[in-house]
Amino acid sequence: MKTIDVDPVSPEGWPPKKRKTAGSGKGGKLPALVVAAGAVAVTVLLAGLLMAVSGKLGIVSVADDQVAVTVSYISGGSEGMEVTTTPGFKLYLPFLQEVFLFDKSPQKFLMEGTKILSNNHVPLLSVRASDGSNFRFDTLEIQYRLVPGDAGEVLNDSGPGDLFKGIWIRAYARSILREEFGRYSSEEVANPTTYGVATTDSKQRLNDLLRPHGIEIIQIVTPKPRFDDVYEQAIEDRKVADQDVERLVAMEDQLLRERDRQLAAVEKEKEIEMRSLQGDLERNRIDSEREAIRQKKSADAYAIERRAGGEAQRAQMIAEARGLTEKFTKEAEGLVAKAEALEERGEVIVREALIRKLQTIRFTLLPYSRDAAPRRLEHVDERTASRVSTRVDEAALTRGNDQ
Image (cartoon, rainbow, N blue to C red; front, side, top):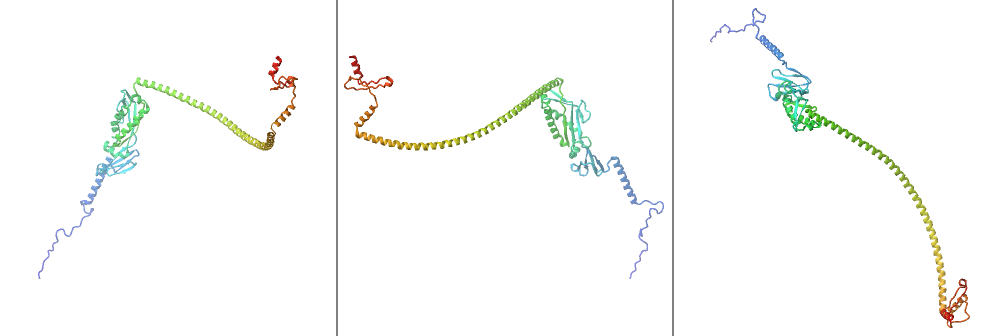
């Protein structure tokens, strides 16, 4: 059996020595943790002082007339931009993000005077008309504003703050206005309707150019254009002439209205008379119809009466005709019988009838006969000639007298 001896001396550093506390002993050093905390506190304090001095405390107030654009320096580009249009406090990370405020209230670009006073105040607008004459606008105002949703484009194109004011408007306004108003002659542009059209077209073209930069034209206020003194006098004379024409036109309209009023009055009066005449005619028509009905009834009654009388008379005449027919039939039969009897008796009957006829005649005969065979007898009515002469042969009698 082998025995191993162990060194009684302990390894170096063992057992560990007991650490002294901050208050133990005199002339002891501060612990490293305290030193690190102090360094962090000093850093934070210095950073706070730096942010306070630079104004980047991580919070910004957005007013009612402002829009905020938050730019992230981590992502960068348009993707790192955030547009805030709602007023209030906006939080961001200092040194990693930055907030830019823009004025979104309506702005005014003025073209007036002869000097450039600011980006929003430039000399007046003069225009050459299509006929070669010149005219000007003493004061022309363009009202514009930043489009809140396009504030990021404004920051990219114009930069921060108020740099967008007047830069783009000043770049485009004068040339566009001169081009649109210069399309018309001086006579045309003096018409408010014409330069109203030019104003609308100018506004449309300016918006087409400015909207990609985040700016929008609200209104263009164009006063009456001014011309040279001679032309102004001509315009004034023209205005006076137009006023005279308008006055004459108004007078014509008044006369036409008066004529229409009088015509309406006459037509109304004639209509009343027409209605009165129509009423009279209607009454007369009704009376005539009533009289016609009465006359028709009277005529019908008379016709019935006459028809009845005619029927009665017809019946009576038919009866009389039948009686006469019977009577004359019998007489005819008698005559036929007589004719038959005469036919049977012959010349005797004729002589008897002649004798009966001669019996009623009074004859005056001469006492002598001039002609043994007289061929003619004459009868003279004594009531008319006071004598009756029977002449057998006048020629013979004449011859006897001559003898």
